[in-house]
Image 1 (cartoon, helix red, strand yellow):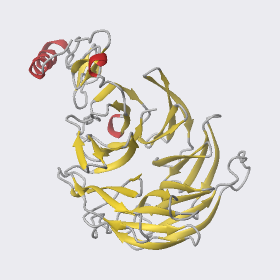
Image 2 (cartoon, rainbow, N blue to C red):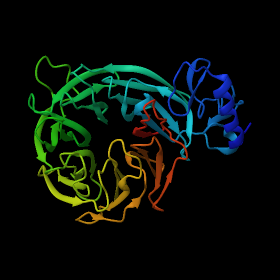
Image 3 (cartoon, rainbow, N blue to C red):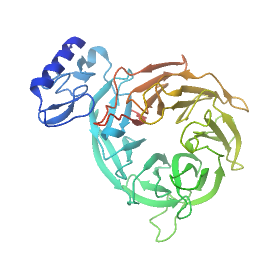
Image 4 (spheres, rainbow, N blue to C red):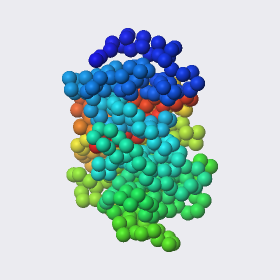
Length: 423
């Protein structure tokens, strides 16, 4: 059964007046149905209104019951981490929320698929969660709790040689987790005690991890990329002292750099390739000091071979590689302000020549941050509105979700902190 938009709005209004309790305050588009906050956009038992259940073979999409077999639009193409509502939300290729949100621990901030599972780094609770699937239904299993270090900030999660690597920002460490044993295997210090290193993105070239380092607030400026030998991690077993990993070098990224995300590229440029790192280029007040930059690291010399200005792109975030074109998510928006963001969109950089060639920005009013390349399209989360974007790299066109994929919390915050392709 399908409902028109007008009918859905009328049902929502009636439900808000008569069918739901007023004792709870729910976030975003949620209503209180049967004494619980419910997403009427995605809940098949309360689709568009409390008590309005979809029929067999139907899914609730944007508050409307949809015949999945007839439309073929219900399949999840991408998962979004909803930082402010502590949930993982599926979305279709048409950027419509699919399925019910899956609750996580506090502040899901990074996603990475491992086999048929999805692992989640929870920033505020300092935990990792493992998400398994029964058919198309997601089931969360608590996996690993990291040692408290005063405050929490798990900034990134990556997988290499069957192990998980998490950036533990306040501790200044790279945490190594065995996803099978669901246990911490090692914790590699990335700086001296009290130095305030702030690990962010992680990329691998063979058995070396390249980790973006920013200074934690209140510490001396630090803009570098750590090179870490992780060759012994596969056999490391909770060393009594020291660590199985070793920092081989720290590569200076320059003033105002604030290195953020890391992407190695080996195709067509030699055996060791290059490592690309986005540099936010923000001043001491965390405002743009100019356009963002891209550091090109040569792994054979462990130096920055080139620093490329990303013309038109401010506060660059994550990277995606399509053929020999590197796509950079861009956009700066001062905290507490409303869109549009400045210098925002997707910036293509041609890597087919010896010097990367920056092309024209595919502009948006949103602020794309985390990205995932799924089925030839780049999906990105907006850092301010909870919306999602889909870039067609061939056509160089952008589609924005009609409704937020991640609803706002009671304070009005809606951050899509990470995205991952469906498994």
